[in-house]
Length: 399
Ligand code: RFL
Ligand code: PHB
Picture 1 (cartoon, rainbow, N blue to C red):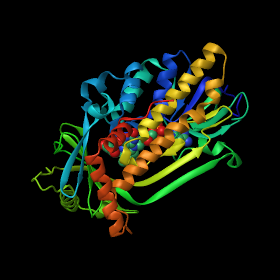
Picture 2 (picture 1 turned 90 degrees about the horizontal axis):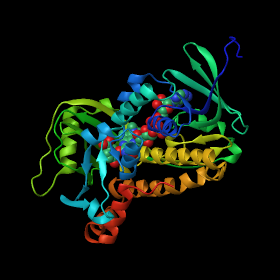
Picture 3 (picture 1 turned 45 degrees about the horizontal axis):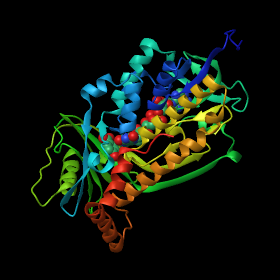
Picture 4 (picture 1 turned 135 degrees about the horizontal axis):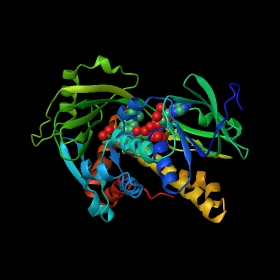
Protein backbone atom coordinates (compact mmCIF):
# COMPACT_ATOMS: atom_id res chain seq x y z
CA UNK A 1 0.00 0.00 0.00
CA UNK A 2 1.18 3.57 -0.57
CA UNK A 3 0.73 6.55 1.75
CA UNK A 4 -2.85 7.06 0.57
CA UNK A 5 -3.81 3.43 1.18
CA UNK A 6 -3.90 2.57 -2.56
CA UNK A 7 -2.53 -0.73 -3.83
CA UNK A 8 0.33 -0.11 -6.31
CA UNK A 9 -0.41 -0.85 -9.98
CA UNK A 10 1.39 -3.89 -11.43
CA UNK A 11 2.36 -4.81 -14.95
CA UNK A 12 4.93 -6.85 -16.84
CA UNK A 13 6.47 -3.93 -18.76
CA UNK A 14 6.24 -0.36 -17.49
CA UNK A 15 6.72 2.02 -20.42
CA UNK A 16 7.63 5.65 -19.76
CA UNK A 17 6.68 7.97 -22.61
CA UNK A 18 4.11 7.83 -25.42
CA UNK A 19 6.18 9.04 -28.33
CA UNK A 20 6.70 6.66 -31.26
CA UNK A 21 9.00 4.38 -29.20
CA UNK A 22 6.64 3.88 -26.24
CA UNK A 23 3.49 3.60 -28.33
CA UNK A 24 4.91 1.10 -30.80
CA UNK A 25 6.43 -0.98 -27.98
CA UNK A 26 3.03 -1.20 -26.24
CA UNK A 27 1.52 -2.39 -29.53
CA UNK A 28 4.23 -5.00 -30.21
CA UNK A 29 3.93 -6.37 -26.66
CA UNK A 30 0.13 -6.48 -26.89
CA UNK A 31 0.42 -8.49 -30.11
CA UNK A 32 2.80 -10.90 -28.34
CA UNK A 33 0.38 -11.34 -25.41
CA UNK A 34 2.56 -9.39 -22.94
CA UNK A 35 0.85 -6.74 -20.81
CA UNK A 36 2.18 -3.22 -20.32
CA UNK A 37 1.23 0.19 -18.92
CA UNK A 38 2.25 3.42 -20.67
CA UNK A 39 2.79 6.61 -18.64
CA UNK A 40 2.89 9.88 -20.61
CA UNK A 41 3.47 13.25 -18.95
CA UNK A 42 1.74 15.34 -21.66
CA UNK A 43 -1.89 15.34 -22.75
CA UNK A 44 -3.15 13.47 -25.81
CA UNK A 45 -3.56 16.55 -28.03
CA UNK A 46 0.02 17.65 -27.37
CA UNK A 47 1.46 14.23 -28.27
CA UNK A 48 -0.66 14.04 -31.42
CA UNK A 49 0.32 17.47 -32.73
CA UNK A 50 4.01 17.83 -31.90
CA UNK A 51 5.65 18.47 -35.33
CA UNK A 52 8.67 16.28 -35.89
CA UNK A 53 9.76 13.55 -38.25
CA UNK A 54 8.43 12.97 -41.73
CA UNK A 55 10.32 10.04 -43.24
CA UNK A 56 9.81 6.35 -42.48
CA UNK A 57 12.44 3.86 -43.62
CA UNK A 58 11.38 0.72 -45.45
CA UNK A 59 11.98 -1.35 -42.26
CA UNK A 60 9.79 0.99 -40.18
CA UNK A 61 6.99 0.77 -42.75
CA UNK A 62 7.21 -3.04 -42.68
CA UNK A 63 7.09 -3.13 -38.84
CA UNK A 64 4.05 -0.83 -38.68
CA UNK A 65 2.23 -3.01 -41.22
CA UNK A 66 2.99 -6.26 -39.37
CA UNK A 67 1.95 -4.60 -36.08
CA UNK A 68 -1.47 -3.84 -37.60
CA UNK A 69 -0.83 -0.08 -37.57
CA UNK A 70 -0.23 0.45 -41.29
CA UNK A 71 -3.71 0.83 -42.72
CA UNK A 72 -3.96 4.65 -42.88
CA UNK A 73 -0.23 4.93 -43.64
CA UNK A 74 -0.74 2.77 -46.74
CA UNK A 75 -3.73 4.88 -47.78
CA UNK A 76 -2.36 8.35 -47.10
CA UNK A 77 1.43 7.99 -46.95
CA UNK A 78 3.49 8.92 -50.00
CA UNK A 79 6.02 6.35 -51.19
CA UNK A 80 9.23 8.05 -52.31
CA UNK A 81 11.73 6.33 -54.56
CA UNK A 82 14.43 8.99 -54.36
CA UNK A 83 15.67 12.35 -53.17
CA UNK A 84 17.24 15.24 -55.00
CA UNK A 85 20.62 16.71 -54.05
CA UNK A 86 21.03 20.32 -55.10
CA UNK A 87 24.39 22.12 -55.21
CA UNK A 88 26.08 24.70 -57.43
CA UNK A 89 22.62 25.40 -59.01
CA UNK A 90 22.62 21.80 -60.29
CA UNK A 91 20.29 18.91 -59.44
CA UNK A 92 21.10 15.24 -58.95
CA UNK A 93 18.46 12.59 -58.25
CA UNK A 94 19.38 9.55 -56.12
CA UNK A 95 17.24 6.59 -57.22
CA UNK A 96 16.73 4.37 -54.15
CA UNK A 97 15.18 1.20 -55.63
CA UNK A 98 17.75 1.07 -58.45
CA UNK A 99 20.65 1.35 -55.99
CA UNK A 100 19.36 -0.78 -53.11
CA UNK A 101 17.59 -3.72 -54.72
CA UNK A 102 14.13 -2.18 -54.52
CA UNK A 103 14.01 -0.27 -51.22
CA UNK A 104 12.19 3.04 -50.79
CA UNK A 105 10.96 5.32 -47.98
CA UNK A 106 7.53 6.65 -46.97
CA UNK A 107 6.54 10.23 -46.27
CA UNK A 108 4.09 9.87 -43.38
CA UNK A 109 4.35 12.26 -40.46
CA UNK A 110 5.29 11.22 -36.94
CA UNK A 111 2.11 12.97 -35.74
CA UNK A 112 0.06 10.54 -37.85
CA UNK A 113 2.02 7.46 -36.69
CA UNK A 114 1.33 8.54 -33.09
CA UNK A 115 -2.38 9.19 -33.75
CA UNK A 116 -2.77 5.71 -35.30
CA UNK A 117 -0.94 3.95 -32.46
CA UNK A 118 -2.83 5.87 -29.74
CA UNK A 119 -6.20 4.99 -31.30
CA UNK A 120 -5.24 1.28 -31.45
CA UNK A 121 -3.92 1.27 -27.89
CA UNK A 122 -7.05 2.91 -26.46
CA UNK A 123 -9.27 0.55 -28.43
CA UNK A 124 -7.63 -2.78 -27.69
CA UNK A 125 -4.35 -2.37 -25.76
CA UNK A 126 -3.38 -2.01 -22.10
CA UNK A 127 -3.61 1.20 -20.05
CA UNK A 128 -2.19 4.39 -21.61
CA UNK A 129 -2.28 7.19 -19.05
CA UNK A 130 -1.88 10.78 -20.27
CA UNK A 131 -0.77 13.52 -17.88
CA UNK A 132 0.97 10.82 -15.83
CA UNK A 133 4.49 12.04 -15.13
CA UNK A 134 7.18 9.54 -14.17
CA UNK A 135 9.24 10.98 -11.31
CA UNK A 136 11.84 8.23 -10.91
CA UNK A 137 12.75 4.65 -11.78
CA UNK A 138 13.71 2.71 -8.66
CA UNK A 139 15.28 -0.72 -8.16
CA UNK A 140 16.48 -1.04 -11.76
CA UNK A 141 19.06 -3.63 -10.68
CA UNK A 142 16.52 -5.74 -8.71
CA UNK A 143 13.94 -8.26 -9.95
CA UNK A 144 11.09 -5.83 -9.31
CA UNK A 145 11.81 -2.36 -10.67
CA UNK A 146 9.27 0.38 -9.94
CA UNK A 147 8.26 3.66 -11.51
CA UNK A 148 7.13 6.41 -9.18
CA UNK A 149 4.73 8.73 -10.97
CA UNK A 150 2.27 11.57 -10.43
CA UNK A 151 -1.27 11.17 -11.76
CA UNK A 152 -4.46 13.11 -11.05
CA UNK A 153 -2.87 15.06 -8.23
CA UNK A 154 -1.36 12.17 -6.28
CA UNK A 155 1.77 10.03 -6.32
CA UNK A 156 1.52 6.39 -7.39
CA UNK A 157 3.84 3.46 -7.93
CA UNK A 158 3.90 1.14 -10.95
CA UNK A 159 5.51 -2.19 -10.10
CA UNK A 160 7.00 -4.00 -13.09
CA UNK A 161 9.09 -6.93 -14.26
CA UNK A 162 10.82 -4.60 -16.72
CA UNK A 163 10.88 -0.84 -17.27
CA UNK A 164 11.51 0.63 -20.71
CA UNK A 165 12.46 4.32 -20.72
CA UNK A 166 10.96 5.76 -23.92
CA UNK A 167 10.82 9.25 -22.44
CA UNK A 168 12.92 11.12 -24.98
CA UNK A 169 16.04 13.20 -24.48
CA UNK A 170 14.63 15.20 -21.52
CA UNK A 171 13.10 12.24 -19.63
CA UNK A 172 13.99 10.79 -16.22
CA UNK A 173 14.84 7.16 -16.98
CA UNK A 174 18.39 7.68 -18.27
CA UNK A 175 19.28 9.19 -14.87
CA UNK A 176 18.55 5.85 -13.16
CA UNK A 177 21.69 4.31 -14.70
CA UNK A 178 24.59 5.00 -12.31
CA UNK A 179 27.02 7.59 -13.69
CA UNK A 180 30.02 5.34 -13.00
CA UNK A 181 28.62 2.71 -15.41
CA UNK A 182 27.87 5.25 -18.11
CA UNK A 183 29.71 6.74 -21.07
CA UNK A 184 28.29 9.60 -23.05
CA UNK A 185 29.43 10.52 -26.57
CA UNK A 186 28.27 13.90 -27.75
CA UNK A 187 28.65 16.63 -30.33
CA UNK A 188 26.67 19.81 -30.76
CA UNK A 189 26.63 21.77 -34.01
CA UNK A 190 26.96 25.56 -34.26
CA UNK A 191 23.68 25.79 -36.21
CA UNK A 192 20.03 24.73 -36.03
CA UNK A 193 17.06 24.29 -38.36
CA UNK A 194 14.32 26.84 -38.76
CA UNK A 195 11.32 24.73 -39.86
CA UNK A 196 8.03 25.90 -41.33
CA UNK A 197 4.77 24.26 -42.31
CA UNK A 198 3.05 25.99 -45.24
CA UNK A 199 -0.33 25.49 -46.89
CA UNK A 200 1.03 25.08 -50.40
CA UNK A 201 1.58 22.08 -52.64
CA UNK A 202 5.22 20.89 -52.49
CA UNK A 203 7.22 22.47 -55.34
CA UNK A 204 8.89 19.14 -56.10
CA UNK A 205 7.51 15.61 -55.87
CA UNK A 206 10.52 14.33 -53.88
CA UNK A 207 12.57 15.78 -51.01
CA UNK A 208 15.26 18.28 -52.02
CA UNK A 209 18.44 18.56 -49.92
CA UNK A 210 20.30 21.74 -50.94
CA UNK A 211 23.90 22.72 -50.19
CA UNK A 212 24.50 26.45 -50.66
CA UNK A 213 27.22 28.93 -49.64
CA UNK A 214 24.56 30.65 -47.48
CA UNK A 215 23.72 27.37 -45.73
CA UNK A 216 21.60 24.22 -46.05
CA UNK A 217 17.92 24.09 -47.06
CA UNK A 218 15.47 21.18 -47.21
CA UNK A 219 12.18 20.87 -49.04
CA UNK A 220 9.92 18.20 -47.56
CA UNK A 221 6.18 17.68 -47.30
CA UNK A 222 3.35 16.41 -45.14
CA UNK A 223 0.73 15.82 -47.86
CA UNK A 224 0.04 16.79 -51.49
CA UNK A 225 -1.16 20.19 -50.20
CA UNK A 226 1.17 20.88 -47.24
CA UNK A 227 4.90 21.68 -47.54
CA UNK A 228 7.49 21.32 -44.78
CA UNK A 229 10.64 23.40 -45.35
CA UNK A 230 13.80 23.94 -43.34
CA UNK A 231 16.64 26.49 -43.36
CA UNK A 232 20.00 26.19 -41.64
CA UNK A 233 20.23 29.11 -39.16
CA UNK A 234 22.85 30.08 -36.55
CA UNK A 235 22.62 28.28 -33.20
CA UNK A 236 20.25 30.06 -30.80
CA UNK A 237 18.20 31.81 -33.53
CA UNK A 238 14.73 32.98 -32.44
CA UNK A 239 12.13 31.79 -35.00
CA UNK A 240 10.12 34.97 -34.51
CA UNK A 241 13.10 37.02 -35.72
CA UNK A 242 12.42 35.64 -39.22
CA UNK A 243 9.46 37.16 -41.08
CA UNK A 244 7.61 34.91 -43.52
CA UNK A 245 8.88 37.09 -46.38
CA UNK A 246 12.50 36.69 -45.20
CA UNK A 247 12.09 32.90 -44.94
CA UNK A 248 10.68 32.52 -48.47
CA UNK A 249 13.33 34.83 -49.93
CA UNK A 250 16.12 32.83 -48.27
CA UNK A 251 14.61 29.50 -49.35
CA UNK A 252 14.45 30.78 -52.93
CA UNK A 253 18.12 31.73 -52.88
CA UNK A 254 19.30 28.42 -51.49
CA UNK A 255 17.15 26.28 -53.83
CA UNK A 256 17.96 28.29 -56.95
CA UNK A 257 18.86 26.22 -60.03
CA UNK A 258 20.24 27.07 -63.44
CA UNK A 259 17.16 25.53 -65.12
CA UNK A 260 14.55 27.98 -63.81
CA UNK A 261 12.95 25.74 -61.10
CA UNK A 262 10.44 27.74 -59.01
CA UNK A 263 9.52 27.56 -55.34
CA UNK A 264 5.79 28.12 -54.75
CA UNK A 265 4.92 30.20 -51.69
CA UNK A 266 1.90 29.83 -49.39
CA UNK A 267 0.61 30.79 -45.92
CA UNK A 268 3.01 29.75 -43.13
CA UNK A 269 1.04 27.94 -40.40
CA UNK A 270 3.89 27.01 -38.03
CA UNK A 271 7.45 28.11 -37.40
CA UNK A 272 10.08 26.80 -34.95
CA UNK A 273 13.84 26.28 -34.49
CA UNK A 274 15.41 22.91 -33.63
CA UNK A 275 18.94 22.63 -32.24
CA UNK A 276 21.27 20.02 -33.78
CA UNK A 277 23.03 17.43 -31.70
CA UNK A 278 24.63 13.99 -31.90
CA UNK A 279 24.43 12.04 -28.61
CA UNK A 280 24.84 8.42 -27.52
CA UNK A 281 24.42 7.04 -24.00
CA UNK A 282 26.14 3.72 -23.35
CA UNK A 283 24.98 1.24 -22.17
CA UNK A 284 21.30 1.28 -23.13
CA UNK A 285 20.41 -1.16 -20.35
CA UNK A 286 20.97 -1.42 -16.61
CA UNK A 287 19.50 -4.49 -14.91
CA UNK A 288 15.79 -4.48 -15.77
CA UNK A 289 15.75 -0.91 -17.08
CA UNK A 290 16.08 -0.56 -20.85
CA UNK A 291 16.40 2.75 -22.74
CA UNK A 292 14.85 3.16 -26.19
CA UNK A 293 14.75 5.96 -28.77
CA UNK A 294 15.72 9.55 -27.99
CA UNK A 295 16.14 8.63 -24.30
CA UNK A 296 19.39 6.91 -25.32
CA UNK A 297 20.53 8.65 -28.50
CA UNK A 298 20.01 11.75 -30.63
CA UNK A 299 20.99 12.34 -34.26
CA UNK A 300 20.86 15.60 -36.19
CA UNK A 301 17.73 15.45 -38.40
CA UNK A 302 19.61 15.64 -41.73
CA UNK A 303 19.58 11.86 -42.18
CA UNK A 304 15.91 11.46 -41.08
CA UNK A 305 16.95 8.70 -38.70
CA UNK A 306 15.65 9.53 -35.19
CA UNK A 307 12.21 7.96 -35.32
CA UNK A 308 13.53 5.01 -37.29
CA UNK A 309 16.16 4.31 -34.64
CA UNK A 310 13.47 4.41 -31.94
CA UNK A 311 11.52 1.79 -33.92
CA UNK A 312 14.61 -0.44 -34.19
CA UNK A 313 15.19 -0.31 -30.41
CA UNK A 314 11.66 -1.32 -29.45
CA UNK A 315 11.53 -4.09 -32.06
CA UNK A 316 14.77 -5.44 -30.57
CA UNK A 317 13.35 -5.29 -27.02
CA UNK A 318 10.01 -6.89 -27.94
CA UNK A 319 11.80 -9.72 -29.78
CA UNK A 320 14.17 -10.27 -26.85
CA UNK A 321 11.38 -10.42 -24.26
CA UNK A 322 9.27 -12.72 -26.44
CA UNK A 323 12.30 -14.98 -26.82
CA UNK A 324 12.74 -15.05 -23.04
CA UNK A 325 9.06 -15.91 -22.59
CA UNK A 326 9.17 -18.71 -25.16
CA UNK A 327 12.54 -20.30 -24.31
CA UNK A 328 13.41 -19.13 -20.79
CA UNK A 329 16.67 -17.73 -22.16
CA UNK A 330 17.64 -14.12 -21.32
CA UNK A 331 20.34 -14.22 -24.00
CA UNK A 332 18.70 -11.64 -26.28
CA UNK A 333 17.75 -9.34 -23.39
CA UNK A 334 21.37 -9.46 -22.24
CA UNK A 335 22.49 -8.55 -25.77
CA UNK A 336 19.95 -5.67 -26.07
CA UNK A 337 22.38 -2.79 -25.57
CA UNK A 338 25.10 -4.15 -27.87
CA UNK A 339 22.56 -5.11 -30.55
CA UNK A 340 20.93 -1.66 -30.59
CA UNK A 341 24.22 0.24 -30.40
CA UNK A 342 25.58 -1.38 -33.58
CA UNK A 343 22.70 0.13 -35.58
CA UNK A 344 22.73 3.37 -33.56
CA UNK A 345 26.38 4.04 -34.43
CA UNK A 346 25.77 3.41 -38.13
CA UNK A 347 22.92 5.94 -37.99
CA UNK A 348 25.13 8.37 -36.03
CA UNK A 349 27.79 8.07 -38.72
CA UNK A 350 25.31 8.50 -41.56
CA UNK A 351 23.59 11.51 -39.92
CA UNK A 352 26.95 13.15 -39.22
CA UNK A 353 28.09 12.56 -42.82
CA UNK A 354 24.87 14.02 -44.25
CA UNK A 355 25.09 17.00 -41.90
CA UNK A 356 28.71 17.84 -42.69
CA UNK A 357 28.13 17.20 -46.41
CA UNK A 358 25.31 19.74 -46.67
CA UNK A 359 25.66 22.39 -43.94
CA UNK A 360 28.02 25.33 -44.00
CA UNK A 361 29.90 25.72 -40.70
CA UNK A 362 30.23 29.39 -39.61
CA UNK A 363 34.05 29.05 -39.77
CA UNK A 364 34.18 27.01 -43.01
CA UNK A 365 37.24 27.73 -45.12
CA UNK A 366 37.26 27.92 -48.94
CA UNK A 367 39.16 24.61 -48.88
CA UNK A 368 36.34 22.94 -46.95
CA UNK A 369 33.74 24.43 -49.31
CA UNK A 370 35.52 22.86 -52.28
CA UNK A 371 35.77 19.52 -50.45
CA UNK A 372 32.00 19.53 -49.83
CA UNK A 373 31.39 20.13 -53.51
CA UNK A 374 33.84 17.37 -54.40
CA UNK A 375 32.00 14.96 -52.09
CA UNK A 376 28.70 15.87 -53.76
CA UNK A 377 30.21 15.49 -57.25
CA UNK A 378 31.49 12.09 -56.21
CA UNK A 379 28.01 10.98 -55.11
CA UNK A 380 26.56 12.31 -58.37
CA UNK A 381 29.27 10.65 -60.47
CA UNK A 382 30.23 7.36 -58.85
CA UNK A 383 27.72 4.60 -58.30
CA UNK A 384 29.59 3.24 -55.26
CA UNK A 385 29.34 6.57 -53.44
CA UNK A 386 25.71 7.04 -54.45
CA UNK A 387 24.83 3.49 -53.35
CA UNK A 388 26.34 4.18 -49.93
CA UNK A 389 24.05 7.18 -49.51
CA UNK A 390 20.97 5.29 -50.77
CA UNK A 391 21.61 2.34 -48.43
CA UNK A 392 22.05 4.64 -45.44
CA UNK A 393 18.98 6.71 -46.23
CA UNK A 394 16.63 3.76 -46.78
CA UNK A 395 17.91 2.23 -43.54
CA UNK A 396 20.17 -0.25 -41.81
CA UNK A 397 18.69 -3.64 -40.81
CA UNK A 398 17.30 -4.11 -37.29
CA UNK A 399 19.47 -6.17 -34.95
P1 RFL B 1 9.84 11.35 -28.12
O1 RFL B 1 9.05 11.46 -29.37
O2 RFL B 1 10.57 12.52 -27.62
O3 RFL B 1 8.81 10.84 -27.00
C1 RFL B 1 9.13 10.84 -25.62
C2 RFL B 1 7.84 10.95 -24.85
O4 RFL B 1 8.11 10.82 -23.45
C3 RFL B 1 7.35 11.80 -22.76
N1 RFL B 1 8.02 12.04 -21.45
C4 RFL B 1 7.56 11.55 -20.28
N2 RFL B 1 6.48 10.80 -19.98
C5 RFL B 1 6.28 10.46 -18.67
N3 RFL B 1 7.11 10.86 -17.67
C6 RFL B 1 8.20 11.62 -17.92
N4 RFL B 1 9.02 12.01 -16.94
C7 RFL B 1 8.47 11.99 -19.29
N5 RFL B 1 9.45 12.72 -19.90
C8 RFL B 1 9.16 12.73 -21.22
C9 RFL B 1 7.33 12.99 -23.70
O5 RFL B 1 6.26 13.89 -23.43
C10 RFL B 1 7.17 12.29 -25.05
O6 RFL B 1 5.81 12.11 -25.40
O7 RFL B 1 10.88 10.14 -28.18
P2 RFL B 1 10.86 8.73 -29.00
O8 RFL B 1 9.56 8.03 -28.79
O9 RFL B 1 12.14 8.08 -28.67
O10 RFL B 1 10.85 9.16 -30.54
C11 RFL B 1 11.95 9.80 -31.12
C12 RFL B 1 11.50 10.73 -32.24
O11 RFL B 1 10.48 11.58 -31.75
C13 RFL B 1 12.65 11.57 -32.81
O12 RFL B 1 13.82 10.80 -32.88
C14 RFL B 1 12.34 12.10 -34.21
O13 RFL B 1 11.28 13.03 -34.18
C15 RFL B 1 13.57 12.75 -34.81
N6 RFL B 1 13.29 13.37 -36.12
C16 RFL B 1 13.19 12.61 -37.25
N7 RFL B 1 13.30 11.27 -37.19
C17 RFL B 1 13.13 10.49 -38.29
O14 RFL B 1 13.23 9.26 -38.21
N8 RFL B 1 12.84 11.05 -39.54
C18 RFL B 1 12.72 12.39 -39.70
O15 RFL B 1 12.40 12.85 -40.79
C19 RFL B 1 12.93 13.23 -38.54
N9 RFL B 1 12.82 14.57 -38.63
C20 RFL B 1 13.12 14.76 -36.21
C21 RFL B 1 12.89 15.33 -37.50
C22 RFL B 1 13.16 15.57 -35.07
C23 RFL B 1 12.98 16.92 -35.20
N10 RFL B 1 12.98 17.68 -33.99
C24 RFL B 1 11.97 18.61 -33.65
C25 RFL B 1 13.83 17.28 -32.90
C26 RFL B 1 12.73 16.70 -37.65
C27 RFL B 1 12.79 17.50 -36.50
C28 RFL B 1 12.64 18.98 -36.71
C1 PHB C 1 10.66 16.25 -42.38
O1 PHB C 1 9.84 16.12 -43.30
O2 PHB C 1 10.35 16.76 -41.28
C2 PHB C 1 12.06 15.81 -42.58
C3 PHB C 1 12.39 15.12 -43.73
C4 PHB C 1 13.70 14.72 -43.94
C5 PHB C 1 14.67 15.01 -42.99
C6 PHB C 1 14.32 15.68 -41.82
C7 PHB C 1 13.01 16.09 -41.61
O3 PHB C 1 15.94 14.63 -43.21
